[in-house]
Image 1 (cartoon, one colour):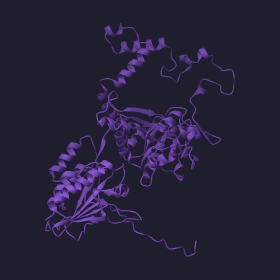
Image 2 (image 1 turned 90 degrees about the horizontal axis):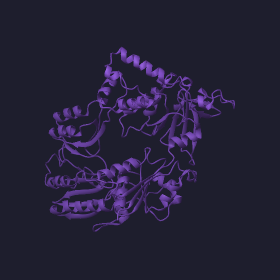
Image 3 (image 1 turned 60 degrees about the vertical axis):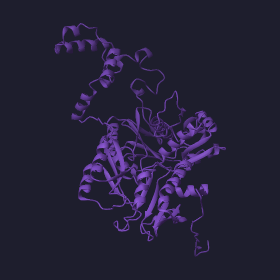
Image 4 (image 1 turned 120 degrees about the vertical axis):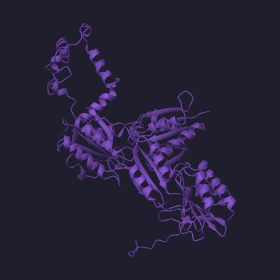
Length: 557
């Protein structure tokens, strides 16, 4: 039987602001999957459930693991803070399901459990800043092109929305919030009230009231939501208030109102509305006169005059009508916001498994396909990572292949890092290196995995420092497993076998990788997996962590 996916938004983090359905959904789940910080926030609610927690930017692996477990018959909770449908996991879970051909009728059951979004929780602490029209914009350009984010900020600023900025700044992304402020100051007063809320309703909650001009003088990070008022937002007693407009019709300091209830919706009492305060018969008369002036055919003039409903329906048809493309082009001419979505295509390229030399043609092709809007980064693993905004990835890959590049995906996949075999002079093990790459390159795994392949016992390319190390020595292969490449306790791989025959090494590597793919947890690096299971095939784990002695401080403390 198929299981169930519960995509849960548990609110800002405090239990009293969590919905009852979120609480019961967590309790009825067999497995809890989420970002480690989120799992820690609800740790007091957990019982004997299986916990799969991952780091930041591992959303896809979490969604894939959740779907897999649900297909095995388990009830799986995928947790997000705030609301799961607002920059949370709900959309991604559906996308992963759709890629697998899921339908609501035949696939696993899915329930999205709503929660209080950061915009709402932060607003409650600031007063009432989003009482009127508002929007949320994420400043993270890891998935969304920055040019598109810029247009959204400008459009929202120009339209006088109250704006909640999510993901405003991180250790690496520092300019985005500065650029957002620059755009906003083009349309808004420097005195516009701004609220900065960090960790709303959590232990480290911190609130700052400032203004648009000075907001960057305060600490802003990934846990901060920046709420920027509109032109009518005002500050009173350290609270941000955005009037909805009641003062236009009502006298707020008196119990007896100027307008009676039946008078408040009359056109003449709403001169700011679409009808501009004119009665409906006046609008019909004006439209009739306009038609005559434009020499509209009599057959059209004789039609019944439109009611307010007709006018509304006509406006809707214009927004979504068949001429949308033509109007979009016209809008571009008028500098209106029209922005077709373009994906960022990510891939890795290299001259080859053994070859490390680039040709002039390859470099020219690389510059042309990346262009001014893309980026390229040379990695320590002898690849160039490309990130190219494009709607035609096939065209990109076609040109790169024609130039002789080896193309591989980026992410949690298998990668082979081979030496240059002394420019091919030590060529005896090249066939095995190329065969491993042919069979396994790009294979999706719980976490990115690198096999280091060296063509002689010198191991100058550092195969022993990769997840799996393969060294060709005296006509046979030595095998190393589970290196830890970074951190205070970094160590080389554990030597597990030597003298492996050339015809055995490729299937052996395949078997090890298959074992890891099947049993590894999402985001679990190979060395952690080896330690957890204790044995991979016939190879038993041994602790290779260096013993570090900390010298006592001179003061004796």
